[in-house]
Image (cartoon, rainbow, N blue to C red; front, side, top):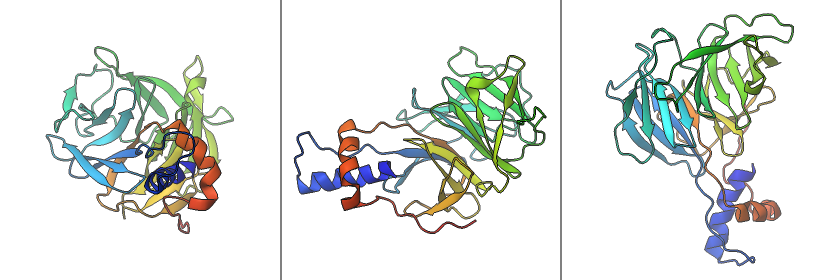
Length: 287
């Protein structure tokens, strides 16, 4: 993929001291974020495979529903056992803080499949077809059920068991379930509160993965069972094994980043792809 090429390209050009009419620097890092079984929150640099522990929840375990507000550099996550919401601002230190939420959603609601778009935290209630959201820019963010999922025939999509969800920069919601890989456009919620989820594949290879979008709208995931990483096709949920990323810790949930890239390196990368190849090697996919 182009972004991984650019990471290697920037480093190689800087090392060789090439001058191509513009200043040459190193491409910005691209990160995804994860929470492990012990309540530690991590960043993973997907260009070089390095990882860093950012914070630990006071409870020490159980966090899930991780989502990243890239505009405000803020991670959100909840405790499934009591619904408590936490936030962590990148670069703020070692402590996460609690968020006072409105009481519209029962604390038992399972928000383990969560993502962020615009100013809102979204989740699909496990085992249902219910989409909830809360505007985290509000003084007291309050969850509300904003849609129920229906299929292309208008029938309810009942009993969605995840898997995970991820929302891309255009508001396309991808749902990876044990019965299929779906896509829904958050900008197309009907006035009656229904949202069509198109079935892209009933043979979903990504069902066991925690998902996040990288910069450039590339969907990746880690298998919580063995720590392996994959690139996931948004066309059908098929997956391609990745190398160079850490197999530990194994994350309960992932969230994506949208770090920008220097425009000059993007332009140069187009002309040098054949010479330098990709920064991260793909290996043969398997189910």
